[in-house]
Image (cartoon, rainbow over all chains, first blue to last red; front, side, top):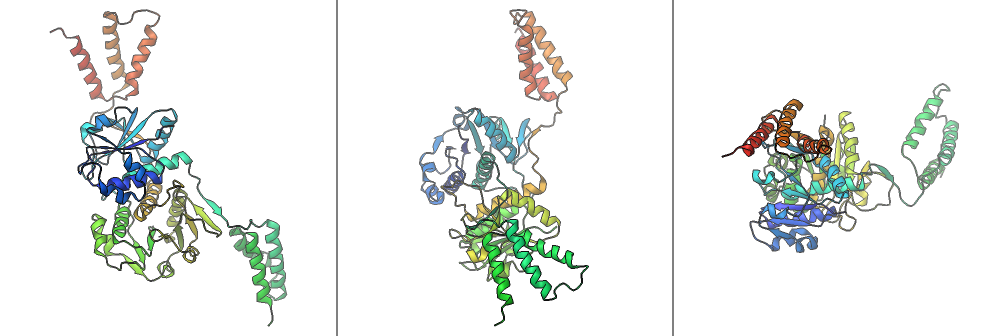
Length: 240
Length: 240
């Protein structure tokens, strides 16, 4: 399955190209094309900010025009924040990435174009794009750093591919306690509390017990933690 | 509705603090706390990279310890990529942001903690967190730049809040053509093509017409574009 290619149109700062490479490697993209970079290429400053993503910098493909840079690709997305008086499909990064994933699975080669710092992509270059991508941002402060714009797309592509796993409870080496483990602890606790007169009225006792149980159920305890609770209870009861 | 507060635990470079402020403002976050910054505070270099997000830098709240920095908050998330032998709920950025949005709507004040460059958050500080956030990344190159880690969370918070609008077709000033507009064009085209012997066999004519129609239907044309097509057709027919 071909991976999307990142294309920087007339990038200015080598530092930004390096940070783009790092962001790409963070999310398993590997092909970077640059069109007519202002400060020439190769550029030592790109290595400084790539933080080890050197293979991407080493293999940068340089082109004179955007049209050349996309010539061998099937589908082009262009990122832009400015309104254009053009009829184009406009995606958010997330919806674009869902589509790109499908297109990649169909064997299509995809290019994602990012314009120059400040100026963005020229209208004549926008015309090349099958669709646009516009980031949801603060309307009063919408200008993203070039590397951060690439990062968000790379992150969304990666998230679309792995499917977001959402939330889970990470535990250590101890297995989770069974309900019987917890009941055993609670029963010991309730007996002790009862003996020591904790439950003042018979009416309220069941509700109080429920409330106490809820405290411990909510935590999804491990065996080790239940053992710790037993230890705490035993310690508190000790008469030294 | 209180907005989540970004907390940088022992940040090193002023440049990174500035880039964090820019990323926050891109996605409408406004409160930044820093704990024990290595290079002191205030730090001129933060302004240079904030690219105009000066109000966030001006209003940074500085603390001596993370425990102090979270004292007035209700719920704490800590971002980490390292495995910890602790029982904690672990979110992806996306699932955390769905939860944070709900909690914010309930009036809870939320802090999101980011560790120092390279070293991350100490285990004793992780303990303070109600839940962890781990980014899905390339397992062989997982280290995100500090500002980029903040950017992804800010982006996900913003996306959760506005709801991702997904894809739409952006048009210019011209309204979209009606189906009758398009039919009118296609009928004129088919008549001309017929007269000029384009459709070689009667059998294949319907399928060929369907194929041609599909070309133009797929584009979701505007009135202006249909007029342009009429113009093209008229021009091509002209005998000068």
